[in-house]
Image 1 (cartoon, rainbow, N blue to C red):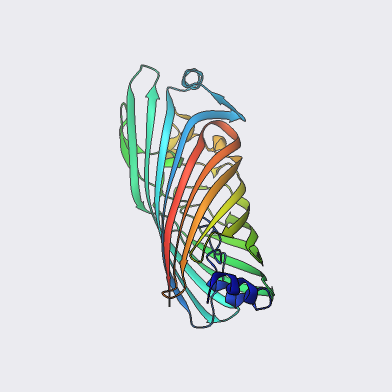
Image 2: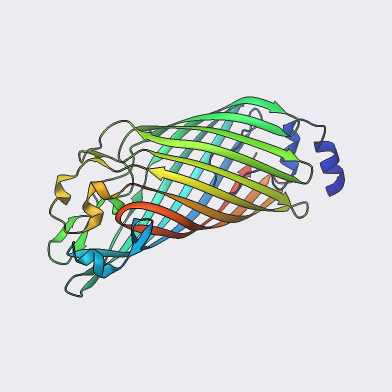
Length: 323
């Protein structure tokens, strides 16, 4: 089947045939965005790297000197790496189950008021989740499905490292590996294919239901993302995506952080919102049912309860195998 005849057939065929298109999947950074046919399995691996730098108060950046006027220590920059392993199975054509486990690696550089610089690190298993996706509507080239996930408190939230002065001590909130709380994650995803291009949108949230073992609960987070994609040949497609996200401050506090003179230890300086833009490249091989993707994103606007490190850029790459 050649590239042109595939699109002619898709114009009058059910959405299931969209699996022949290289833009059948959303950009690799979107989670839970598709259903599977009955008895189909999928295993996936994603790698994400996010860079954070420059402190913000509201929508404006502030210097390290300004932060050090109020705190003994200022965060300078942060790198987050995440390895995400996922598994999907569809007991019916309209119902897909999904599970995901994350491995997190964090590092943050700091400046002290006396001129000393130091770095802290933490790594381990992050938050995990199990999800159910239910198809609500499907027509020629279009679909709508809902998702509901259960957030599992598999991440440790008592990570420690050496800090000059206090020595081995509890790390501030951004350096912990996850929430440590139970929660739910609802979502709603729409996708539409039109001849030689496609688009989609997803709204999602993470709602934490209880305090973790250290006595606090991360602020709830919501996200709205929309994308457009177009195939460039039978195997590759390109995409552009925008994502708006917002999250609240921390409820409660970790008593072991009260004495740390750094803004990352203040539970009232963790909320904010931001807007990202990203470009993506997707690959799909219908013969082996293997797909892969790469997405590079940049934060173009942010409003943070600060001083708080702002997002700079992020990269996500992944591969998926179906059978």
